[in-house]
Length: 528
Image (cartoon, rainbow, N blue to C red):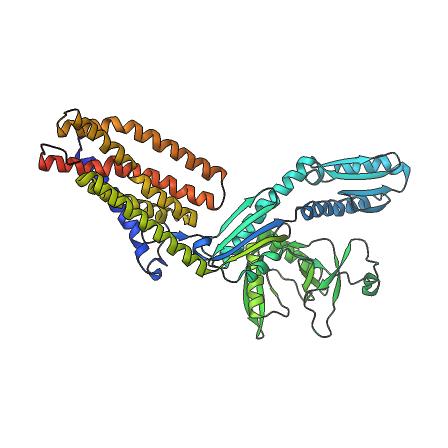
């Protein structure tokens, strides 16, 4: 145990040096680490919501909307196919979680059953169950597994879209994670304006491009008589003399999913939003504009018509302009939403909390005070109890804290208030291994062993106990991280890293100092 080869010494010194390099920037000003890449030395420890202040939001995904939209899509397909085959029906629509209709003529019932079971395999089979009775009453229901898959996919997609939107706002180190089956936890350190975040997340931003039905009567539609295959939608921000409602076709000519970019810009001195389609969207947009010159083309965002320009000529470049009553801020936000993508379902804020930066600063000061007091007590005890060897242990403790802070900085792990508690606990535990070794050395000295033999035996016989005790604590930290959430994970991270660094400093750093001292002094007794 007292043999230290040159390569081992080099590794120990190199690890300690890396700890100093990565931990050092935490003593610098904020400007120093602003432009440093995350992987490079120079990043500070990221502070969590409870230390930095910010906003906490608990969101719920309205999953019923996802199922309803899936059924509405099936309804449109059924209407189109039934008309193509000239099968009479009535009462087609979504009711009680299913698409329902009634076949008018008994002789068409069997033909309709075959048609419904064979419509668009990727749309209906195997995701749906088709039932048609002898009276011609038909229903199409999503299978239980299809509904579960659709809901799960909607939540995952919502998390990804929320992450994109938050990243676009410039928030650093947000926490975005799933909670339960239909909820999303959102923690935004440093955000002092949660209303704008809620406004961005409150919009589904589902954009579609549809043709306006110029043959339908707006007065009849407002009275509740909307033509089949059409939909009455409000105008988003109607100006003086402009329509407040539009009748648009349900068929989506081009979907917002085909958008690849959108940017705020100006046209005739007014804020507008430019957009660009991918290859598929460009072809659809070009074909639709070519076939419908002279007709109004509605741009629909979250079921509101934000613009309905008349197609003057074919648009073949795959780009366009969305104009309306925009301000610079609203044009920026709309462009952001379109770039990030549409949410598959609306989000509802269930819980909201705001932590002021003053409270976070108080927490940091309290954590610093507790850490300093704990450190001083440990340092004082080790010197009083073990003399020179206690000084070695204190030097190793310094490197232990340095390695812990350096690891948090390098990994860009978020430090929370429970994480500070983990650091305080680590300070106390860091010298535990040295205490076991030093007490074992004392026992060997009492048995009459020489200094070299006593120290060697102390390290050998205490090593198994040290590994066992630290491994059990490490397993506990891993389980806390795996099954815990939020603050518990912050505590588990610092505890786990602290255990690893304390074992390294106790077994390697302290032992290296003891070995160097033994080789240099050749003592006749152990000062312990």
